[in-house]
Every structure is written in C-alpha cells, then in structure tokens.
Image 1 (tube, rainbow, N blue to C red):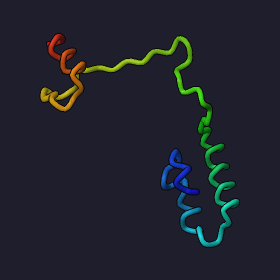
Image 2 (cartoon, rainbow, N blue to C red):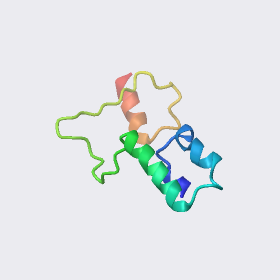
Image 3 (cartoon, helix red, strand yellow):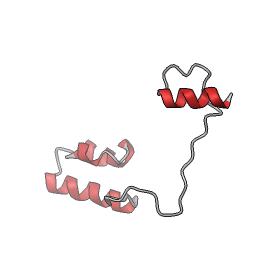
Image 4 (cartoon, one colour):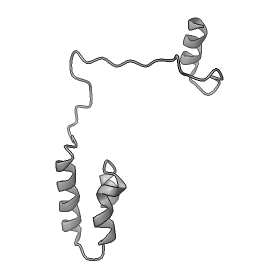
Length: 81
C-alpha cells in the first residue's frame, strides 16, 4: 500500500512507516491520501502541458563525451559546435 504512494517523499511517509503496526490498511491509505491532498498532488490523467506552455532543453551545459546520449542528441551537438 505504501509503495503505491511513490509520489510522496520518505519524510511525508515517515509517520505511517514508523507506526505501520498500529494502523490498519484503511488508516494508512487515508493518512497518505490526506498528505497527497495537502501537498496538492495532481492525480489527473492529463499530464500534457497546458496550451501555450513551452518546454525547452539546453545542450550548452552537456559534457563533451556524448557517447551515452541518443544518436539524435549526438547529431544535434555536432551541428551546434
């Protein structure tokens, strides 16, 4: 049950983990659900950015040894040098 709340930090789950023997499964789920609510964690299925939001990635700070990067990134890096 606790593992299913992967989006919470260990600090968030500490009380439940420390008292696992004293809480029922329903109490564990309820406590972790309340923490998710308080942390405003979004469980919505729509994980796409809102219209008008942009995403960018900068290769300027990437190491020179790009052998571990996908081929398309290696090609991009060659063209940008």
